Image: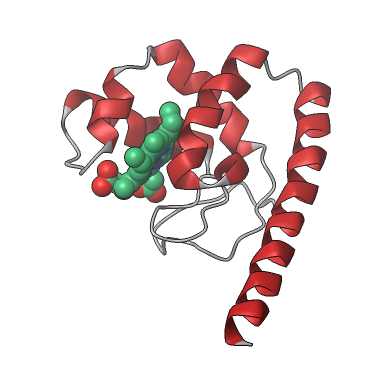
Length: 125
Ligand code: HEC
């Protein structure tokens, strides 16, 4: 019985996530975000959740302040900020790609309550 309840709870969770994924795609088209950037951002979803809405364990990127995002990514890239995995990801990105990703994540709607207390946001909810 417990397992069934868990199964139902999980499928509701995924339906909820799928519904905002569709909204987000429409949103990106309106905001002129390139396909190259959404493809790049998709590689972050494995850890940071759909459109940067972390399901826990990693920081939420959705609605993150653009300057803060760039500062963190450049810090990972040049080694000024120590990290477990992000230095690998940041080193593979060009400055233009980091800026494009910063704009992408800043304009994503935030759906998850997972917030690192130091993160400044664009104010989207
Ligand atoms: C393998 C999992 C993984 C992937 C893939 C990944 N990240 Fe991360 N990210 C992390 C973890 C873990 C942290 C916390 C810092 C650390 O320990 O590396 C983090 C931290 C960050 C932060 C800093 C947030 C803050 O408030 O300090 C940013 C920005 C970020 N990631 C952006 C990205 C972007 C953009 C991508 C895709 C290009 C990406 N990440 C892909 C795991 C991942």
